[in-house]
Amino acid sequence: MRARYPNVSGMHYQFGPGGLSPAVKAIIIANVVVFVAMFFTDGVFWIELLGLSPADLFERFFIWQPVTYMFLHGGLGHVFFNMLLLWFIGVELERRWGTVFFAKFYAVCGLGAGATQVLLGILPFGFADSFYAVHTIGASGAIYGLLLAYALYFPTRPFLVFLIFPVQARVFVMIMGGIALLMSLGGGGGVAHTAHLGGMVTAWFYLRGKGGTNLASEIQYRYLKWRINRMRKKFDVYSGGRRDDFNRRVH
View 1 (spheres, one colour):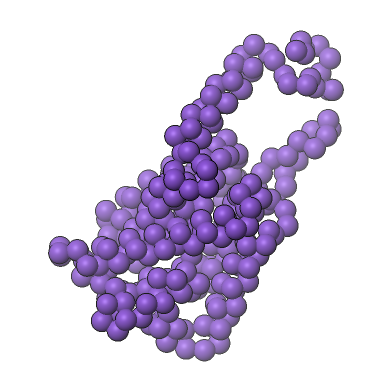
View 2 (cartoon, rainbow, N blue to C red):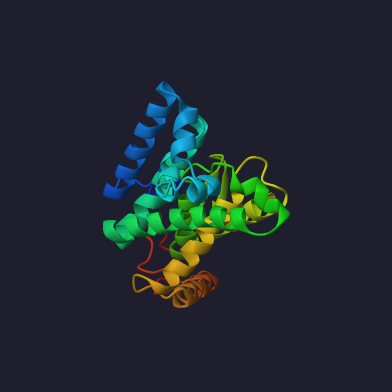
């Protein structure tokens, strides 16, 4: 949910970014279709066949799993909130990047999140056993990558957490990343928090070298823009003026 300022009568809230963009629409449809199919058939069968497991990948050569795991979800809440967040942040990113780049970015983040789970499962340490034979499912890793990108491009865009508390996008993403890190260190509790982190890290490196986007320059630009806006407020400067305020100085 985001704040809008459409007229001089005041502020109102609009739920979501508007209509679905092409890639976001296709991804949502694919995830919902797979979820419905799992619901009316043997869901465990599909998880064992299409969910990502290092054991299946290396012992049974289920090489499709790093892709297919992104379209499986473990319950209605899981798929609903993932698709809701995809709509919230994905539409604006797709509008900014274009459908082709957005689709590639989403896929790369999902693959990076899956690769994180596979890597952790084959490391020569005791904790690797908890990753090796376990199936990872869900689009969360790819969506966490989108979250990182959203915070870089729209850092001050407000999120209404639980539809109540307004939080800037960059703060929201830092909180989500911090929770994923702490939960990963604590064992995860049945949720693939390490995949979430893998999606964010993948997004960071991908944006740094692809699509003509220089991540360092983007961050610097956003910081300077924030400083400029802060100085404008300090010195009472309003771009273009405000119709409903005749007593302020307009430059």
